[in-house]
Every structure is written in C-alpha cells, then in structure tokens.
Image (cartoon, rainbow, N blue to C red):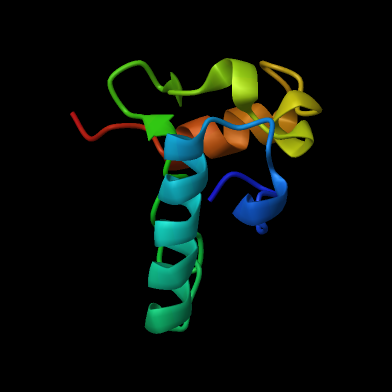
Length: 84
C-alpha cells in the first residue's frame, strides 16, 4: 500500500477511483491478516515495467521524502527488481 494512505475516505484529494482501489486493497489486507509488505508484495501503485509509481503525482509524503537514488530508494528498488 502507499505508505500513510490508510483512510481513503479522508483523502478527498485523490480521485474516487484511487480511493476505491485503496479501500479494496485495505480490505484485502485485513482479510489476509497481513500487509502486502509482510507478504513480500509490492505497493499496489508500483509498476514493474517502469520500476516506478503509477500515480507519481499523487504519491504520499513517505514516498516523496525518500530521495531518488538514496539508500531507502535503492534498497526498495533492488528488493522489487523484476526477475530476469
């Protein structure tokens, strides 16, 4: 899940379709009992083809605060790198 986006109903700055997508995946996580990260799955907005965010302009602050090419960025990119 995009970090910090846990209350889609309060995120009126997001388009309705994205709020619904977040709500769906939050319900899926609740049913599974584990977050996507705990299950080794990437963020729902991660695009493996571009290795970037599908909704870059709407990404949360936690993603904005991670400098591109910084330690955190490189760690997550390596962890989510597509298999050859």
